[in-house]
Length: 105
Image 1 (cartoon, one colour):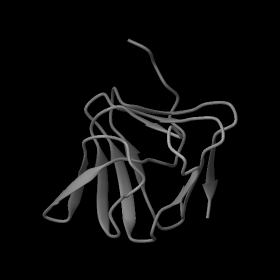
Image 2 (tube, helix red, strand yellow; image 1 turned 135 degrees about the horizontal axis):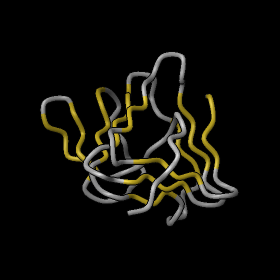
Image 3 (cartoon, one colour; image 1 turned 120 degrees about the vertical axis):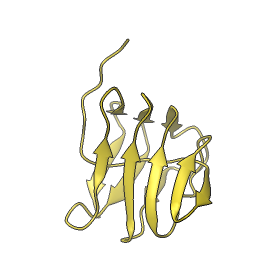
């Protein structure tokens, strides 16, 4: 199993809202507008024509279930780290490839 370094930020996925929480099913650039964005399967950001995402202020992100969020070259992801949380559960990770960015909005 590969190990990944946790970097405090980021995430992108298709979601189905269930009691205020979004559950990732496949990569997309449509996170919820409020609540927690739960990523529970691998997702690669940057495989579409859209090359950036800025999360709404009321959205926290949780990566779990051994999922890995990958931010590819040329993709920019922004969130407010003063008010938002990125939680990465044991066995899961966030991988920012060279040329990809996670930044404070």
